[in-house]
Image 1 (cartoon, rainbow, N blue to C red):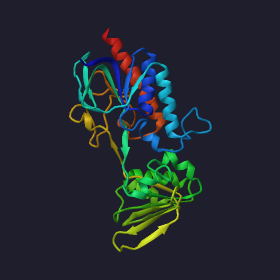
Image 2: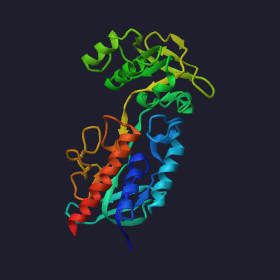
Image 3: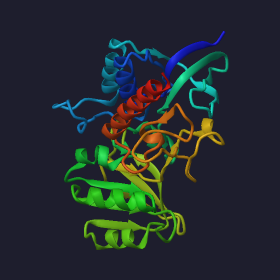
Image 4: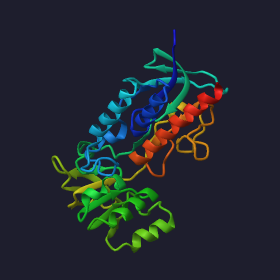
Amino acid sequence: MAEKIKCLIIGSGPAGYSAAIYAARADMKPVMYTGMQMGGQLTTTTEVDNFPGYPNGTDGTAMMNDLQKQAERFGTEVRFGMVTKVELNDKIGGIHKVIVDESIEIEAQTVIISTGATAKYLGIESEQRLIGGGVSACATCDGFFYKGQDVVVVGAGDTAAEEATYLANICKKVTILVRKDFMRASKAMQHRVHKTKNIEVLYNTEIDEVLGDNVVEGVRAVNNQTKEKIEIPVTGVFIAIGHKPNSDLFKGVLDMDEVGYLITKGKSTKTNLPGVFAAGDIQDKEYRQAVTAAGTGCMAALDAERYLGALK
């Protein structure tokens, strides 16, 4: 027999936990399935200094633990598990069927999707080892910690250009490593990069290794044309080669853009199916901040509550 619930939350980052807090306080008795990475992307960040309510800062894992405890205090049931299949109903008042871990059946009146997006990394061992120790995929999240220091940005698109110009305002020097002999960023963004005096662009250049044992001390870069290797002393490495929204489960079911971000209606969190809502980085490719994700989590719970109220 399938378990019947009012509100199912898929994903456990700031958006999911905020949705859970609001849904639980609205007596929707939410059930959350965390996914394999409890707490989401933020658990890979050592320090969080820009989330309201933490005057001395905190770290990502501790913050997610705080949010989980708060959600549970109001009655959210947090479960470790992975949603592996969905059958979403396209009728108002229809029941959405979800399979967890290929065996557990859930029937939900509302579903809030907060599965987030995964930052793309280069995949080299030294980079992976130093994530949180100087390697980051978010300049606006972590750039503050490198004030007055030298950093590297990897990437060639608008994201890399935006991250580099943001960092240039607070860092001593920013070096952009571009794999090809041109940038893919818009002309306007390229002009901004080239006009910024403390940004240097190295073309045909890739990271061979991130240097440092526990924290970043530099990068060894290689020119992929001449094979010449150089070492660049830096304390921060920002990977800006894009994000992949975790939306594969919903392909062909929910409206999404060409990259895979779920499309929501207007200022709401409503998807194209009634009773299904999306919050956080799964539907936000512009801001990708913990605080904005938490805001949309709140919105999703309120949208779900109003949806259920209209059915009565």
